[in-house]
Image (cartoon, rainbow, N blue to C red; front, top):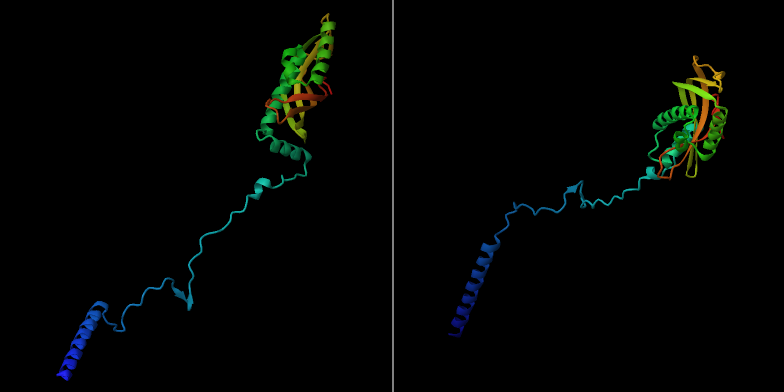
Length: 230
């Protein structure tokens, strides 16, 4: 009876173990050797494990062009104009030359007519004082000037310089006009009322590039037109 009870107990344990193994088998399945291998995180190339791509950590270098020194020119006039342009971004050499031609015509006509109101804002104090003396002398002698501006043959830059904030530009004007001066009795004392005269004047204009006033003023003159002031 004791042996039979032990045998029965062993059979019960074996049956329970078999049931457990069968349940595990049905849940986990069995390997056949053809199972698809689990995907690797990184592909292998040439036997080496490929590492994940690192995040883009490139550092942008500062744009050195903004701090690069200004290009140098062998032409001092071109270099001076470039220096002025770098100090005043609104400066344009062609626009300046066009304005200088207009200023030249306005000044020579106003000087001939004794028009101080037109001259005053276009001239520096020294130049205006020199022109005013000539006008006053003509008025005292009752001289009369007949003047007709004809045009330009050539205008060109002959100098340009930037000294701190003060820009100075010199322009050569090859111009044509008709000019004749008569005395109080109407007698011709200078010029020819019928002849076109060729003259070359060299004028210097100045402006503070840091000032809000965009106008340039005449600061020096020399040449053949008779308007000479320094």
